[in-house]
Length: 338
Image (cartoon, rainbow, N blue to C red; front, side, top):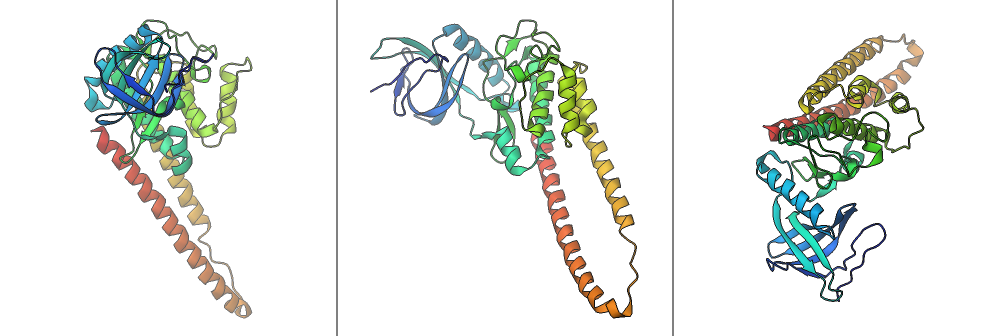
């Protein structure tokens, strides 16, 4: 039996096994599990005759139509990885309640959330994925749209090769119009740092907040201090401090394009890498002095030397492994951007 009801939060509940049959195209989709719920509808993982798909269901035909139009435009440049492929759109009538629903079907993106990936694999990946995200935004902006509701919940990392992918197009808005779907923490209007007009700087503010969210591992409520409150979080988070200038420019709307913001982040990464390398050289120089050893303490010293040699080998191995992994990560990123 089909189990469907609309709760107060707008979610449309479907039991696993529910069969959705399109009114016009007659295509059938078997519900597997809930993927997510937003202001404009509910997304399910479902089975089609060709495999797993993502199905978004809503009671508002206008929202579905608008999202489908955006998806179709994005699908035309699918080679640029702007979004999942559009598959089908149709109506659905509940055979028991006779209520009408509207849905569309798109390619299912299999991956893990961006915060989960960072938690498992290390914070050094954050810049790589932000660079990828800015590349995607640049292409979307060139087509006359902004993403709008840009947040960590709308970003997945696909399995190897690792790539960032956005998954919910409910907030995509044509340039110049008002952004109607947003999440407060990532919204500049909430922080009093700009309007909700759909423009490039609106998305780039959200990118800065995503970066801050990944490093600070928290979303905080405003206290009325605006950007000073966000600055304080940057200062209190050691891994964010080197990116202060980059982040503030994004928060204050000083970048004119996603490409400009991406190039600035790349330059920041180069400076940070160079600074860290210089600090390591200074540390090695200060540790190079050999301590005086008395004859009576030579045996103990030999033991200490062996231990130190073991530690050095271990440290060298760990450092080499990290360098190789980071090198591989960057190599994969740039390869798949070509």
